[in-house]
Image (cartoon, rainbow, N blue to C red; front, side, top):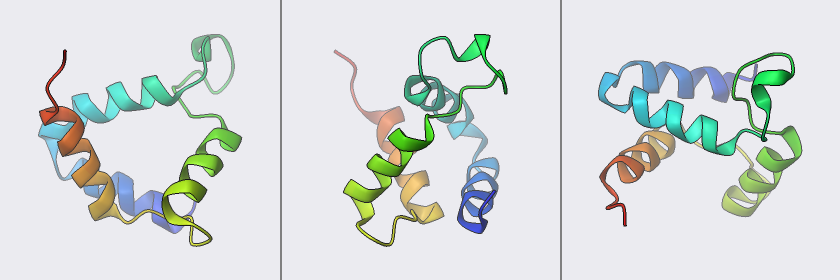
Length: 81
């Protein structure tokens, strides 16, 4: 696990109101049938994650913890319809 990933986990851990949203987003990003394959947790496909990070952050490819917290807040508050 990279340092930026640990920072994101730490930041989300400090915001318990975002835990359900973070879990929901993790499941949405995970490939179908993730529960049938190790590691049996909703982890995004590495190539999909690389693509998403490349399109969002360019060559840097590393989101800040603040960006992820802001994104999760947006997901939680975005009206469903």
